[in-house]
Image 1 (cartoon, helix red, strand yellow):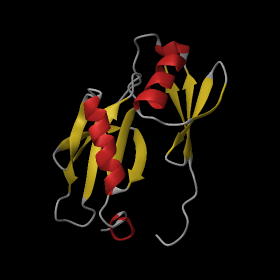
Image 2: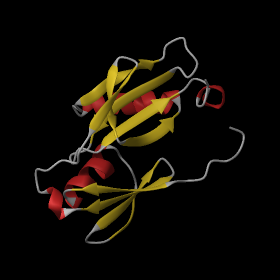
Image 3: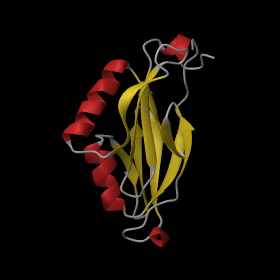
Length: 146
């Protein structure tokens, strides 16, 4: 990937803005941008993540998920996240473990010894939105390897 990546914008539903502010802002440490009574912008490693409150989910509600079988694991779908450096990924995995995060897929190396080998981990936000963070030893050669 020799071209400069452009930031993406992703908007998701959450059941409670203060709960989302605590999770994304404090637990994950994402800087907060603009906000209103109905949404909050976060800087997700240079990308714009916007959480929008959906009262219909309910105070204890969860968004719907399904899963797909990938490398022996049930990968939650849909999911989102970021591709980090190995150092950033390791630090995030340690931070998440330290705060007692329940992983849907524990941090591990997926596709070991194959094209596209990557470090990955999955967990849910309080509303049930699935997040994946991954890293490659050589992102340019491995991100889209076949």
